[in-house]
Image (cartoon, rainbow, N blue to C red; front, top):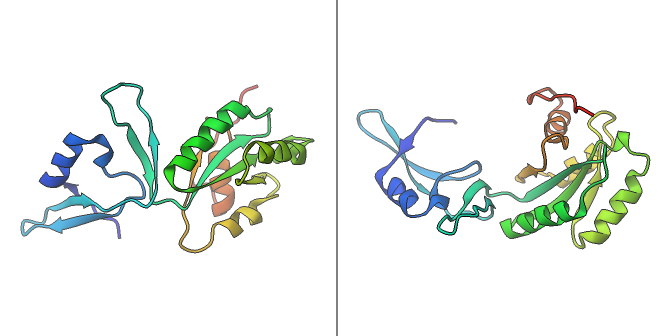
Length: 184
C-alpha cells in the first residue's frame, strides 16, 4: 500500500547528477525502513517507458513526467478542428517514450464529422490507433476499455480543455477529477 518516504542518500546523489533520476508517477522504487521508523526511497528501478518533458536549456536533461506506461493517449477535443502539427509533436513524444501511442478524439458528440476527422488523423499517424469517444454519450468508451486490459497503464497527454479529466471520470464511472466548462 501507500507509504510516505523521504529520499535516501544514494537517490539524492543520483538526482543531483541527473534530474531524470528523480522518481515520478509510475516508477517502482526500492525503500528502506530504518530502526527509528523512518522510510527512505533508495533507488528508482529501471523504467520500461517514460514520458519526458524536454527543457530548452542547454544544460538541462528534462523532467520525467510518467513512467512504465503501456499506452500514451494523445487527447484532442473535437469541439474544434485538431491541429495536425501539434498532434504530430505529441505523437513524437509518445513514440519516444516507449509506450504505444493512441489518439483519443474526445467530444465526439459535438462534431458532425467525427469519423472523417478520425480518418484524416489516422492517415497522418500511420500505425497509431485512433479512437473517437464522448464522455457525455459514452460512445467509444468500450473501445478504449478494450485497449486497457489488465496490467496496462495509460497516460493522457493533451491541452487544457481537451477532455482528459472528463474522459477519466467517464471511464471510472464517478467524478474523481474536477472539470470545468470550456469558455467559447
